[in-house]
Length: 388
Image (tube, rainbow, N blue to C red; front, side):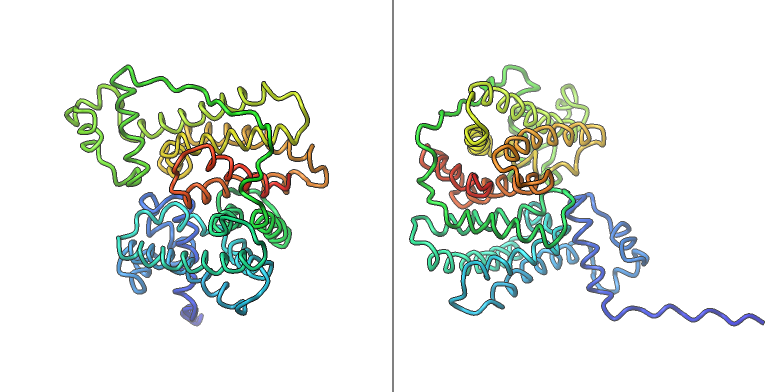
């Protein structure tokens, strides 16, 4: 008679494995699109087994966000007070790179946290920025140290924004060096005589369809696509909710139109900006950085939606947008490798994303208050990340 197989032993770190799998799923699919079944599959258990550890999806989500922030707090607090900036940045970078697959939880999806959980998360990130800020002040006697600290962390956190395959140690070296350059950059040091950037003009909404899109974008940016209702969008343009369907088949189609609009604006902005550049790759990168920063300030809500809401798009739209993004990155990568031939394609791509991360976090630190001085400051920091 064959003996019955022994029951599988439940690993002691089961809860930790669940949180790790959940962080990856939430980052990849977004909070609302992620399911307990998908998370359970990542651990090799049933969805029912998850509920022995977490009462619901939100509790698991809040745990993921808090854990990522707590890891960063532990990393900076593990560095002795008064330590060199390089040591502080290396500690933050190591955690960010090791857990890059979960980074989207706090970067974009944290807006779905309840108010108290958001407050706790902001406090932890504020502590991390404060520790970096202290080290930046000690290292460089330059203005706007808080801005430079936030921007440096933006360079590090950018590793969660893309899927470029790069060895962990090499990624840590690249991003730590980029963050250090950002911290050492004088925000007033943007190249003199840089050509003023003019973005392609966006026409005022002239049709009901365009009015609906214009009204939906700031709602998606503020509350998240999944939280916005058709009723809210309809109210913003003075329509009955049922009237939206005469212009868009569904809410996802409005989101798709917003993301395609963002991709089109960016493509035209790059083409228009580089057409006027006849000099070398350094000038091209200054122009690209100025253009991207201007775009982020001028179209803050649209950019936020296009970056954060890809998970809510139909597969065919998501693929076409991913292709457009790769083409945009390739333009930067080509110019950066011309300016810095020691970089291979993956390294250049990683640094380009670091520049984007700097623009986002510096803009947030400035509360997106627009003006020439702020645009120039952020542009200088982006160029610092690139090493130009």
